[in-house]
Length: 68
Image 1 (spheres, rainbow, N blue to C red):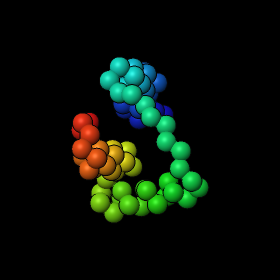
Image 2: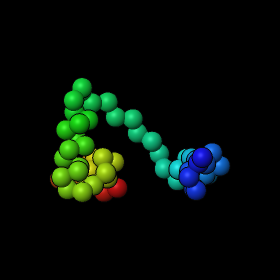
Image 3: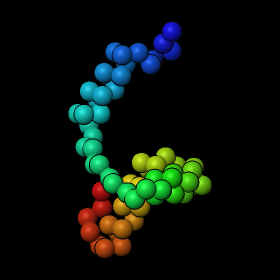
Image 4: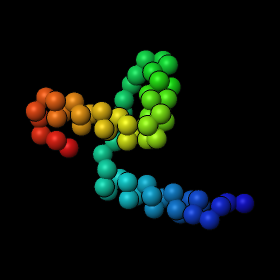
């Protein structure tokens, strides 16, 4: 039995919204680094994605580039 809001139609709607509003960037890291990133993000109560985006933003600001 599917949970409410977790059906195929819901997934399609989320995918359509994400495709229209976000770009995807694939990131390759060495074996074991994903777990390190996840642990660091969890330590500050962030998702992996939010943690990586914040790290990128900090780097951009340090390099005096245009912020995201």
